[in-house]
Length: 88
Image (cartoon, rainbow, N blue to C red; front, side, top):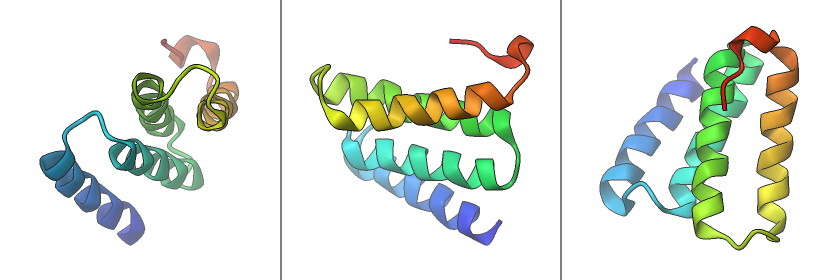
C-alpha cells in the first residue's frame, strides 16, 4: 500500500506539471492499475488501466505497440471481473 500511495502522489505531481494528456501521466495510471491488480482490487485496476489506454490513444497513432500492451492489460483485468462490473 505504500507503493500505491507513492504512485498516487507521483500522479498528482505529474498531472499538475504535465496536464492530463501526457505519456508520463498515462504511465502513472498504468502503474497504479498494476498495484491494484496485486491488491486484488480489480474495479480500481480496470479504471486505471482504462485511463492509461484512453490517454495513449490520444497520444499515439492507432498502430503503436504501446496501445496493444495497454489493451492487453484492460482485457486481462476485465476478464477477472464479473461481466456486470465492466463498463466501457
